[in-house]
Image (cartoon, rainbow, N blue to C red; front, side, top):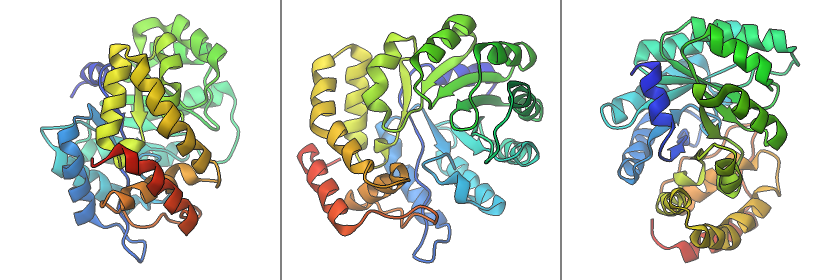
Length: 303
């Protein structure tokens, strides 16, 4: 898949990032992971982010990263494009990106670098180095320590033809509007805030109609129903789901640090498709929180 073909994929349809399956000893479990991808296939996500943020990229060793991406590609080949996460310091991010390309991934989601703050010149150099290290398309994730300005993105757009996507996980409306107006259609724009459904309407109004869904991992039927209503301008359906499920879900998610991943794993377990526990430093929901989630999911019916 060429970078421009990846860009076209990113501009329509629901995106998601599957959980990474671990066994009781916190080892990667390839067979359940493949089964998870097979379960999600019929719901029709336009692309999947393997070893992304919800896939606990940050806790995977390089060898495990290769295994996760390979299983995803082997399972979804010819059906759903696989975009692999890459991140960390520049040298390490390049290694991840090149390994994903070697395995046959259709694109790279460049996650924020680790720990240290950086100048705009440093961020540009980092993103440019990763883009230049591969031929496949790259999406930059604007989040955490990586907060790119319109000027920096324009520089990167001029230097890196394979940088085709901008995923926003910050939610600064002024900054996003400025970026969208400055770069126009040069990038595919993706909503990337946690529980993106709540922000989908606002992002669509800013010229970003596509987002990635975490809840697709455990209520895929509902996630697709929401996306289809969102795409069709059915605000009544979107408002009802936001009111009855998403806002209470966010309130539960906000009860613990790092629960944006933990609550999705809990939901998958309740849906009968457990991905095992989260790895430290994340922690799982407690028993009471799991029961609250069960009650929220019950009215949605079988998925």
